[in-house]
Image 1: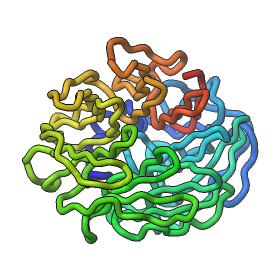
Image 2: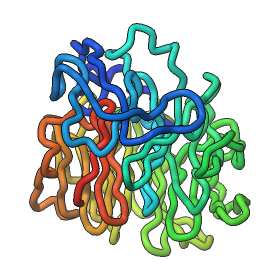
Image 3: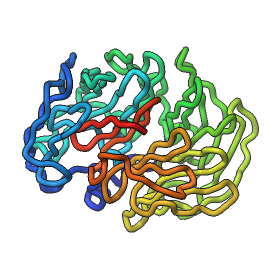
Image 4: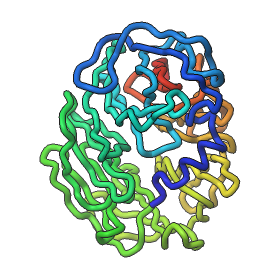
Amino acid sequence: MVRGIFTATLCLAFSVAGCGSDDGEGAANSGGNGGSSGSGATGGSGATGDSSGTGGGAPKCDGAFAVVPLPYVPNTSLEEWGGFAVDERGAVFTTGPEPTLTEDPGAFPTVIMASDLSGNLTTLYTDDGSSLFGNLILHGDGVYMLDGPIFPSIVRMERSGGEPVEIVEETVFAGPILRGDFIYYATGGVSDPGIYRLDPETDASTLLVAREAEIAALDLDGDTLYWIESDGFLEETDYRLFSMPADGGTAEMVQALPRAELALVNFRVIDDVLFGSEITEDIDVVVTRTPIGEAPTIVEDNGGLGMEMADGFAYYGSGSGGVIKAPLSFASKTTIAGSAGRSIYSIAVGPDDLWYSEFSCIYRTAK
């Protein structure tokens, strides 16, 4: 499991993807489009600031849909320990202090916030310093997410806010992912590796298959589960791609895959094609496309964190700034209007629109 290991290094080498500006001066930037409840970060009105773009402090948030009160920002796309999820009701996301915008980031706890479709911000939960949340999933009135950077479990929080409750205590190595009516995840580490299906109606988990090797990535394509196994983070052996019917059955090895040099993230399988972001030995971020049975091809050599796929397109942060939209063939690429040059902290695709953030500014636009 590689979550969070390389974040500090990447922030130095890939700052345009959301680690913040090295010369930020903490320009004032208050508000959001509405108030909030609870404690911690709160909404206000309007957005101010003396600079824009990716240098000289926080941007003005011109044209932003909502603004998180500084020094809070929706958690960076370079760090899996954060989340930004969107559905037909709005967004739920984690926020933390941006180190370049405060002299004492430790004084600001992690806060989980929500935005409705009018940009009104609400505080759902303020952490006491003991948790770190990531990989948010919205399902009905529940928010499912990982909790804990070293031995993460899965917790559930009410969409209206409140204390997160642990529903999976085993260490989660891959997932959780929502596909159809179920949530899938893989355990490992201190417990035996295995792939489970969680029913959000009951919060009960069912073991689908037990494994022996570390499960590094997991996805569901149609009725088929796919996952990647590894001999361990420090090993140099190839990855191994396996598949199995989603309802259970016999696991079959599909093919060996070249090992990502540092990390493999954003793993998806769509119509028998594997997609993922890799962090290379030179701290480059690339996107690979691998039809099953074939060798991987790099289709983006300067971007890919974060990355979301929906409706036949990939949306991802560019290494030079902005959000890129590409068909899953990656035959062509366009920059989402209004996003060019922005340092992308978070990306989420809703039913009808695209949400992304830069510093404290949240933008909502057509997909």
